[in-house]
Length: 447
Image (tube, rainbow, N blue to C red; front, side, top):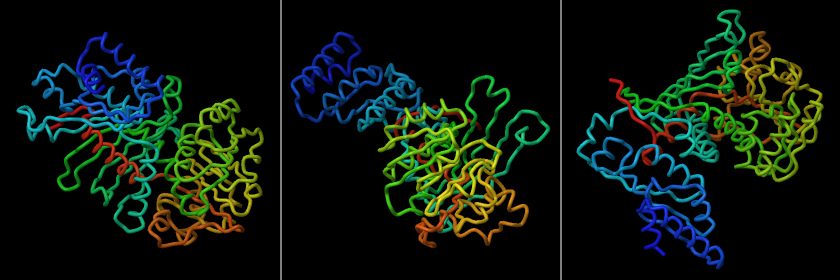
């Protein structure tokens, strides 16, 4: 069987592909329980349907002859493969859950120091090929510990209003500059990200737009530039999951969600990596959006997902309430929030009423300076009714063991993980490292 697999994977003859299809069919039909490792696979023969059959037959790992992540090196050795083919093969293998191994040529004549110092360029598909939501949760958790220990350095965001609230310019959007240094990864960088309605929405583009730039903090060389909206959405969900991890010891949870969009999805996915979600109640202004959410998220929720028509219903009988909307209305009322509940206010504006914020037994944030000037606490902070002394702890304090977090049956806790650049930089650093190892992405010499 090994010889046949290697013959196929080293060849580009369609007839041999049929033989492999037949072989996999035979293994499946006979019910043979066997673990298969594919050696010497060619990236230009990767096929999703075949890989699905191979997985069913028992394939656990694929060793690709990737050779290099630089097209010049591939051309020098006449490998007759392209970077795009490598990306496709690695992506499909990763999607199938195979252990993906790559063989590389080290020290090729065209591989100079200058080439190796070129900036890595990663698309959204490159990033998605090397990360899972669980990875992002673990990376962000470690970064929160760094916040608590003082090894994560993260200034507050610098915002540029492009018509989000300002009268001029009239583009219905904003951008934030979010720099950070992450000690455990010894990496620094900045995310340039924002959200737009207006013309961007008319063109059918996603609300969030983002790029992440990484540097070597020792010498200032730009090491990577990558698409940042996927990381933004994933780490947004991860922040809530980690906050809940330190605020709730019981690893089963009932959730109430306001906002059935992308970040509602990623938050649900992230929480499911730590907790068993027993039930979920969802409210969205557009009921059809809630129904679509319920259909797509059923694999992440053990129990039933109920879409409700009344906003108050999403807060009833739950352990945690998540608000992740673009609403400028204070729609979550104090009277709706029951004892023993943690509220995650994650929108850019204040989604819960003043009464609940002022009555919360404890307030936990991801970044004190930032949360006092954006999101749920901004208005009350500017009025002098919420101060730094009002805040019980940061998520970093909880992660580092400096403060206790578990909610009691009688407490109501407000947690505001509004989002920090440190999470983006940490996740992007791991993504860039893995992408280099797998030969993904392009390269560009800026200087």
